[in-house]
Image 1 (spheres, helix red, strand yellow):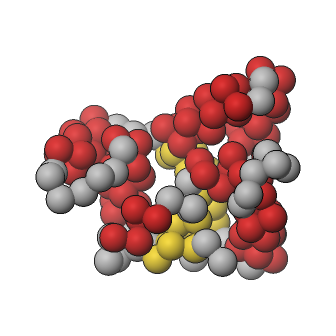
Image 2 (cartoon, helix red, strand yellow):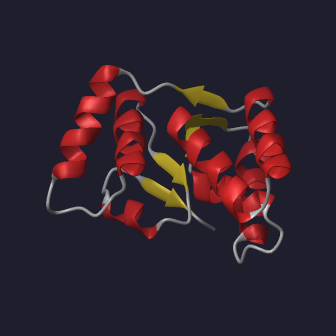
Amino acid sequence: MTIFIDASIFCAYANTNDVHHKKAKEILKRYIIERQEQAITSEYIFDETVTVALRKANKNLANEIGQHLLNSEYKIAKVDQICFEEAWKLFQEEKNNFSFTDCTCIILMRKLGIKQIATFDKEFKKIKEIQVIDI
């Protein structure tokens, strides 16, 4: 099975002071290490993760996290033009309150047939076909 990893997991994992740090470690350990689920994220999540690390910590941590993601077992999906356009349509809908990055995640997950997302973002629970993994 494949699981999509959101920036909230990576950021909490990297920040030992984050309220979700222990949960993030447990999620990554349980799903990626122990169960050896295929983990995928996106270039937008990569961007969000290193940017948050830079703003909340420092450039060294941002570089460290970025290098770890690039050299790890995580696959980093690209948002092509079709996904971008579909994400933009989803973003514009009045009924949701997702960020544009979250919309790209939803569209990528649909396109790739991924049903699980590891995230602390409660908004994803509004999507019926997606199971939120938050322990």
